[in-house]
Length: 316
Image: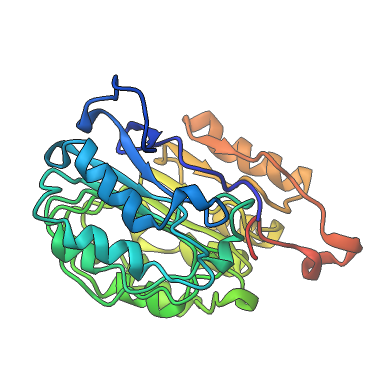
């Protein structure tokens, strides 16, 4: 796993770790994104449930706007339904909650594909004011179709995002969604999404307010780029993120030969396998029009194996 670390902020609020015995001069409840986590190998930490109860007693829960669920134990043995259900049970106290991120673990705590998950849509039902929902990890993750009026941002960070999750998203009614970020991952770790699964999203008929689309970290990044090149949704995007995957010259050529991208504010292709010549072609085609293009982290395939040696930024 590369480039995945603890969140520094959520909902624009700085992340603050809650620990019993913190100084009396705590931030105001609504001035921080509160991270609740425990170390399963530290006896004094106790179970996550106790840490969460202490948080609700110490910080005014009615003022909490953002909550980060960090390590809740040995996450490859106990799935995210444990902390998620505890947060849902406190919905009548967390009346101002607007953002939740589940699975904020660094590589040292657990590889991303070892973070076991569950159905996370209960949070959307329990918190009608929610604006942002993020999840890190993939095994066991479920996202059946849901309707939510206010959700603006939906992020799934995964080394292998199940296709059923992608289909659940595309079958959901999220009229306020403007930011969607999907780390699709690799088949070895459950990433079985195909471009056909993305068709409803790319058609432009879903999520009328969508302005940022990330289809990232995929082993089929070239196929995705080809599909995006003619996708109606692109015309109304401000930012397009195809980073962290196996994108090569063939995918970049499809983007250049497809619909104009000069309306974008930003095109993120970092972690790619483009030749220097193709990278320059992309930059020359877009940067004079004011498009910010991220072509950093140009890589070479493993063992000179060509396309078969390309790799995503995040897998296990």
